[in-house]
Length: 256
Length: 271
Image 1 (cartoon, each protein chain N blue to C red):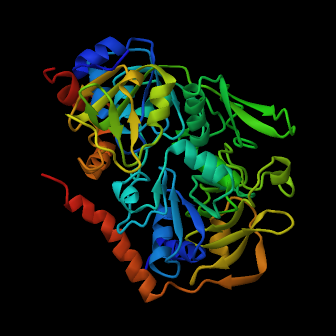
Image 2 (image 1 turned 180 degrees about the horizontal axis):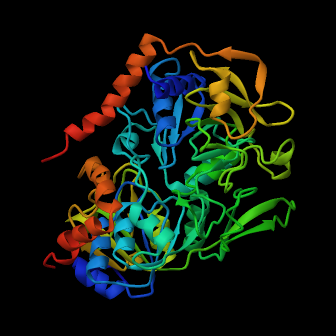
């Protein structure tokens, strides 16, 4: 088993059966589809392409794959997804990735570097994330942990986590609770109940506190009741690998 | 007024002019890729390109030098990675500098809705606390006149032309598309002129669940372009060519490889 597998299994476990989950593409989508195959068969997957209640039998490469439309409860236009379903508060969990995340779980997917007009790296941009982060009842972030990605302050706030600390979300009029868990390849971070700063609450098996601190760009605090996550079971690993194989299979089907 | 049936080269020559603001829409599905290639072939310049999810076809148009500005909300190669031509244009100004105007998906979708509705702006709960409003002057925070609540206003898109791809049209130019329908209806209704490329012309449109119908009198031109969405797909007609998206990464990473591709696949091809 590799560390990405541990991360995706941990993310899948964070989803409660029956929840309505707004899914971004990549690792969040892999985790949500794994959850549907394990403990959460009634998880409702919502993709921003307007496919609500999609039940794909293979892992989609994009948020608009035909298998999502074919298996959805309903297919609607993009304005409706954001206005009627997300903005109006019908999404339980938003599942997001990040290029950079900071001490207060603010997310950057726009530019790396201090100058927006002359970026060091131009990233894809916002997509659906800002409003998912604002309006989903809670947000779970899935991201690999390193000094590059876990920074004291993001270069650009694309999606608001907990702003600069307590009370910021209410002041900004953001209705959802914001990021409640950040699941990485090393462990799990959660916002401190009072300061809203991300602290380490769990480590994956075999990972040390020192490793987690070394991969964090701020002075990472550790919860007094730090736990160790349950390693992925053989069933979880098998289902995850089968799921990922459904995506690579597609290359083999390529017409000559 | 009713939709005119045209060839693709004729439709692009008639509807798309240098300096126009042009949206090619299609949310992963039904992307009008071959219409984009025809714009490259006719060497349009100084376009303001609009699209929620600029992906491969916009990477190609930007790399070919068609655009001076991009209005968008997510620019990447879905499931693969970055758009290298887009990044080269933004970071290094190659082949020409590219101005950007960037939104979130919710913001862009509502800009289309406002324009389709004939309104100057739309409102949404969005952008609050993000760094986007500081860099995008088509976002402004306003107060609700009834409750005082602060909300985001986004300016309606001002589109000269919208281009979309659909499965079918009938001979009169009525259009039907189904599957993931994205923001195409709003894009067509938001624009002064519109072109729909279709997989086929059928004698009569039969109703499909969840389909969108665009009446002939709301569309300017229809062109028959089978496979016009490739490497995207047309639900019930073709599959998404995922390996094309993967292969694009290597082709687009390097200016020379890209230029060879551009000549071999688009410019030197007999029209």
